[in-house]
Image (cartoon, rainbow, N blue to C red):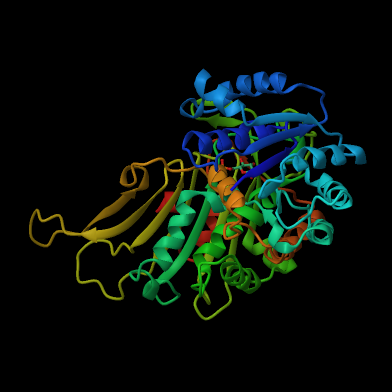
Length: 481
Ligand code: BG6
């Protein structure tokens, strides 16, 4: 199967930070179908050789183990090309079409790694020159829209040019190995299904914490904020994977139908519930990993007096028979105490304990990063004497150790899925719009709220109100348990 992959935004951050390194890894692992061509397009005039030299240089900023040797780069570069493409010039799309028509590959992937504001323009032009035939797949990077109306507008234009099954909306969290393992755990094993419900589960916590600040992305981040950047997409996608009903088949629409049902079952916000169930925060100067860290308002390209949130914690519920009354807590933030992403399923305590000491409930922790793995926390007897209190122990599954062969990262996985034409790990337009529908009342309530975000010191777990949100239900965040 031959493929051509075009990277729009070929000189942008996403391309050199994530996409080219992921393609290189796929190449190194021998997973790219042979004979493929990768074409980066952008506004600058440069030759293939100049582009190769630039990309090679950029690899210096990529994690050591993922950098190519000179020989590896030379053979990878044979498939990597560059052409100038000014998005506003219709004849440049014609030139692209001619390049693609040199050989009519079986699959053509058009990856829009540009600002989403350009998607409608690019898609419309692709339609004009007929670059929307059945073998073409278009990949759309987040953020897909700024609110429901803008997301709908992007989807309207995309749909006017491409069929839904040609559109691959990326949420790279769906490509993370642990998210795949959550599916495997739930639907490939019988063990947890009887317990995966309100009768046995007390609460679910989804945390995506980052210890770094906004860095050089101050201008982008300030118009986005944590709710749009992380909750509307990544955190909600994780929630759907935890809460969905078993799909009837391992196929894209069967899975996405079930995820959509979850999104539709989320408790809608009202003005009062936003004030009660949502905490927004913004970091101030503090200490991150032992060094002084500036506050958000001191970061480059952030307007002084900005009220953009860098932290959000939310309490919600999935209103259906399986989950009624079970709190789902979502939390994300920049400049938090550590970089970790995890899903914690807190089970209920035993109804009656015959043992001395604390009756500590079981919990299942799905770690997404920094390491991916599973921990099942149980109570056990140490066996050191009579009437001893039970001790907490955990069964740990380290997937990197368990599966020695090359495991693929999120972008590598997703790129290979696009090339193979499998939509299971991509977000359908109705899911994405429903997620916007759910978060929008929060954005609206914040726009009217004069109090602004709550400050928290860099290097902490966010505003104290986030702990209070969980404590109100008699629970605590994982790190406080
Ligand atoms: C991106 C956000 O979608 O995800 C970033 O725009 C965030 O702000 C990143 O840092 C986190 O991804 P990961 O895979 O590093 O957790």
